[in-house]
Length: 226
Image (cartoon, rainbow, N blue to C red; front, top):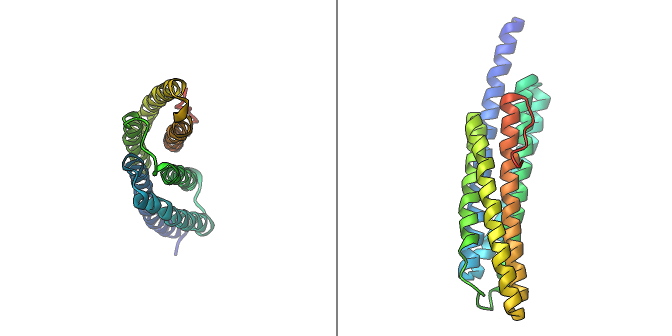
């Protein structure tokens, strides 16, 4: 086999392995999106069973992260990708870490539900579910941007993150007012502040993924949080 034929065969194998990895990435992303939705649904409805399901699902996401990580290292070791191909693998490697952290935050929110489920909510939840819906969109679009190498879609995730930050500001001000008016609400309001903060952090991780996509496509680092 000539050197050019060998290079072509290696490229074909590399593309097949990357397709499989990207399918696993989408699977992990779907599980994370589901955990975000379910942890907020559990909080709204004070559903202990659903909250526990989110906590249990975190193990599945952790295992998937480990599987993808090992396969990324295998691709680097056996296919020896260069230049942009190497950036593609490295980007995916970083993305799964961001997804795993998102799942951890969703699990933390589910644990809040377990702590406060025996008391009525101090207010109907409005902005927190709105944040969660927007963040699920950010997670999906950041992953789609990677698979399609879509620069415009990646940049749009940063704009959504600005909206998430605004919603968290509203949540913070509203809960602070409630605490000042009624000190008996302080414990639960503090828990809900943590929920808002953790959702905001999930948004930051989705933005991290979008920034990695921009680096993959352009070779330039860009901060979407500016």
